[in-house]
Image (cartoon, rainbow over all chains, first blue to last red; front, side, top):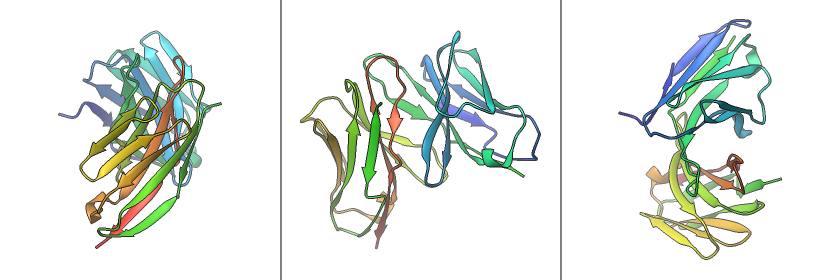
Length: 113
Length: 110
């Protein structure tokens, strides 16, 4: 089984709809991250969390919200989706500390019409 | 502000033609420099972590090296299956998240 899973893997929705993307991990990491990736713009950080009670905004948090339901679960919500939120979304985890590697999930391809 | 610049943006090689990808960085207190491979439509796959200048790591046809200002990913005798986007990231002091470059898109032609 994959260490980091994301659901759904693909989603097509309409402008104005509320969407939730879910991420769960079995790596036992405290840190979890949400990124979006657009052609030519690279990975951009949306939100990150260092533990269940710690949530931080990233580079592009406007229009998004998150919930850290447990150490292993981190959800990203689009309250009212708009077409320029069409992108690939990745969840990542990290152990922090001395070794700061991040490990990514398979991604969710979101299309907002 | 931590920054990462990767070059070239795209590289096309013939099978067996060795080359290098560059990652230049500025960071306040390097905790680690990371290389990832990303296939189209998939999540980045962790390759290497480098912690200090002079360090080298190898995996199959890939070797990553680190200086105080840049890292190189050397690809020796590449094969078509090495075609992917290669991402570089740096981690700085404290709890700041990793900063990623935009990647180098490598195509290896048979």
